Length: 197
Image (cartoon, rainbow, N blue to C red; front, side, top):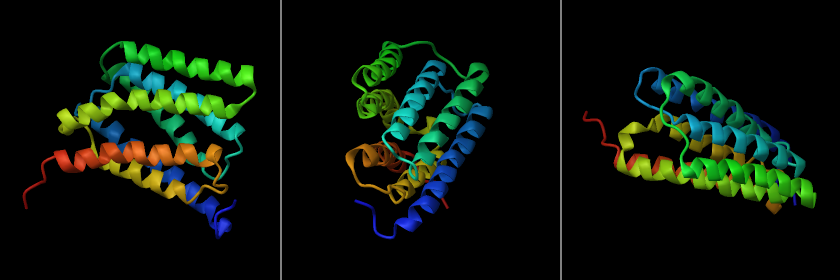
C-alpha cells in the first residue's frame, strides 16, 4: 500500500538524503581536528556493506527512500578515504566476518534471485558492525560527535516519510537505520556531559 499523500514522499526522500549526507561533514571535521580516530577497516566494511545494501534495496523496488542509502555509500567512502591518513587500527575478527557476510549476501542474491535475501543479510552485517560503536558510545561518549549522530538520526526519521510502499522490502532498511542510529544518538545524549551555562 502507498502512504497517504504519496506525492510528498519524493521531497522527503531528497531532504532525508541531504540531511544524512550532511551528518558526515561534522564527523569528517572531527577527524580533521583529531578528535575522532576512525577505524580504517570498519569504515571500509561499512562502505562495502552499504554498496550491497544500496544495490539490493534498489532491486527491491525502493526509489524515493533510496537517497539516504546512497548518501551513506558516499559518506562512508569519504570517511574511509580520510581514515587512511587520519585513522587507526587494522582488521578485527568482526570486520572480517562482516565483510565476508556482505559478499555472502551478494552470492545468495545471485543464487536465489532474491534481492531481499541480500538486503536482509547486509542489514544483519551492518548491525554487527554497529555494535562496537554502541559499546564505545556508552563507554567513551566523548569520542563521538553528537551533532553528527543527531543529523543522521534526523535523516533516518525523515526517510520514514519517503517510504512509498509499506511492504517489508521497502520499509525494513529505513526503520533499521532510524532505530540503529537513534540508539547511538540517545546514548550520547544520556552519557555526554552537558555544557554548563
